[in-house]
Image (cartoon, rainbow, N blue to C red; front, top):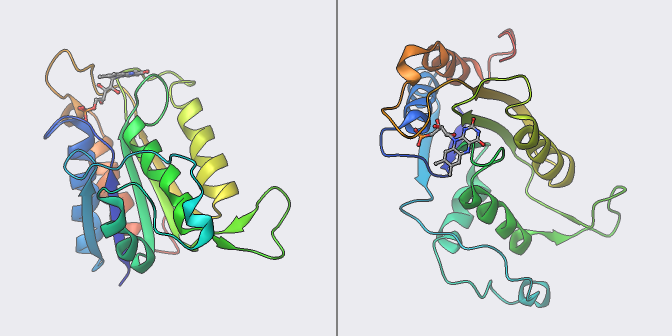
Length: 199
Ligand SMILES: Cc1cc2nc3c(=O)[nH]c(=O)nc-3n(C[C@H](O)[C@H](O)[C@H](O)COP(=O)(O)O)c2cc1C
């Protein structure tokens, strides 16, 4: 049994992203994992101010929902980042959340090349929805995920579900007409299954 924390970085109530998350949660729950969803729409997290107070033993000067999330982040085995594709990348809410990892970084006296400090070691996964469905649709989002979360912060990637072709926001969510909800269920169910095919 793993402890899974899903950070839902926006999207409409019961929209494509919320439905994708919910299918993933059903699958993970059926596999016996404990899952919590934190919506960044309901829990505001502001971006880092770069004041560096945290580098001098002080708590983050931003007074928002992030501080209450820190124990949950530290307790999680897997953090799932869920977002609609906005302007070809992750939502600004998810990016603000990621920036705030700066205040939980710890000193690393022997950092690997290109890294300056160490972060809690976690598994991570990416769930995204979009209107378009071209081969380049998620390119920037995937690049950001890989560079910031996997290469820099050092999380271990457990996979991505890039749900393109869900319809634009000038209409009802259309993810239920795609195979993505079934894939999200299977992704959640098999994420810690060694024999499962990669998503
Ligand atoms: C501000 C904004 C920017 C968007 N940018 C893109 C985009 O760059 N590429 C794309 O394919 N869809 C884009 N979309 C469409 C959404 O990604 C898509 O409809 C998504 O599934 C909406 O998620 P939701 O139903 O959870 O709100 C955008 C929508 C909004 C509101």
